[in-house]
Length: 148
Image (tube, rainbow, N blue to C red; front, side, top):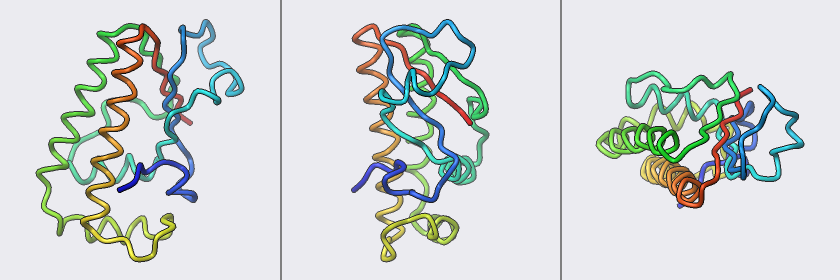
């Protein structure tokens, strides 16, 4: 299984950057050089669109904004939504992934990617994101979502 970040979806640009920082930024949208070293996942826009289609729901955050989750309650509220997506995705039958895997096949490195692998990787990716955000909340750090 794999985390579906920019290293797997190399052609999945643009990316939504999920970042853990020590303290919030004063700027509305700081220069990427101020946070890019702390990115824990570059989440492809195409993957967000695919997830929304699969669970038949809209994104609960604005992918075009710079969002700062400054407190543990804000972070936990955000991850609760990710966990809801993860639950909905886990209940989705594997055959639903057939159409979606064809949609993103041009962005994948592995040409022999199966629907089962794809579903498992999507679930693992969401779970990884939740884990990283929970670590940030537990250590008093902030989470930044830098859209495009």
